[in-house]
Image (cartoon, rainbow, N blue to C red; front, side):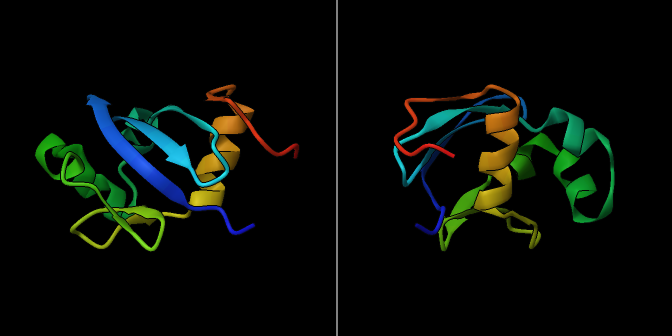
Length: 90
């Protein structure tokens, strides 16, 4: 199954609650990534811009052209212990 983000919600500064199409969900803290200040992500240090996230083809995306591959996000959240209610085993 192709991994996609079905729903998301900004729940705090640089924190996003996401639900994937396999039913797993959790909250991810993007603050360390944003603080790294690399490439397009540096623009997301502006909280107002970060909060303008939207879904495009199942990926979290921002108006400046930055997006997060849903497979990468899910893997990061899994490794960090941030996912719950998993349906499929890895």
